[in-house]
Length: 509
Ligand SMILES: [Zn+2]
Image (cartoon, rainbow, N blue to C red; front, side, top):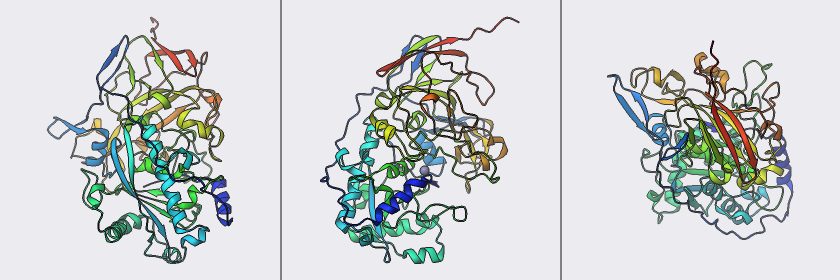
């Protein structure tokens, strides 16, 4: 279960905006975004003096109960076949069905727009060009973020699906959000088949997923989103994406902009989940209310506070980029990450998969998919204004997990497949409070801050990135060792940055 975080002020502002009538928004005419295609990627190993960029990630390997090596496949296959996930593949041409939803007691006219305007605006938010959007559409975002590797398209239904229960029924019954996945996912697919009998739905089926869990559906509903509260932390009228069926559910109100055109940030965040990305903010409140909540990625991430481009670990998981891996003394030039995918991976012994512990260096610039959220952002987060190096600690080691609650039991490297479990998942997440003790202290993905505040619980700023002259602290691994190289940022301009790695000489005792 994945969802977006509360954006307190924004949402109440949106409810206000909905009350306006006759507001002349959505003035541009729909125009589909134009695909960019990836520059040729030969997937060859590139070996340089002191570093290497592998052409492909390795297949993730575990031991079977005979002690033999067993391959679980790519990151996508590992979570699909052994992690109980039903996600959209992250490369190539992929399709989703977007369903505009209303309720018998909350029809489109409550939004002060016509049904046609409702559908048009959803169409713009998902597949329009940048003129149709305050930011970019879902499709354009993922096409650009993937450097042309993913072309996401699909169908916006031109008929409105009336949800089988009214808003008051849902509230009266206290319908649990999981019912969307268990009951209503199937119902909406049946509705689609009846409504569009001439349309062959099989063209939307995702290969390799089980029948009944293999069509990606995004439902956008009329009723305004409601804040989660302490009494109701699982409000039905929020934005959710399920991991066991490819289904997202979000209010139209999330896209109602301050200006003329729709704002797709929330739909982009949720579509990130449909592709298999996790939330990077702590999604659960700590049991003890006095606990200071640590924000591991300090808000500035699409999978945290829904701002800017996807970041290094996400793009590695999605197979949109492969890092430079430091193997000896060297100096590496990297271009802006959002424009190039350049990334440096630091480990003393990398297993060549996404599922390992390592550090990442990414050259952040306030450009391309980041530009909008430098000045706009939202009430939780704005992106830094000045280019700088982001340092991330990733601990994406896999564990055997329980099949019911996906709770980690034992690191995969310590166990054997099928003995403790035949299911795998991340050992850590950014939500440490409820993890079993052994896994509790480590984060999946943490931004290491320059000039760190006392508690990492506020939005990262310009001061938290690293630039020429800044000292990058010793990089310690959760597994006990320390990165063997001293890191020096030699130069940093808008166009690129040069970073030097020198082996730390151990002093003789
Ligand atoms: Zn989320």
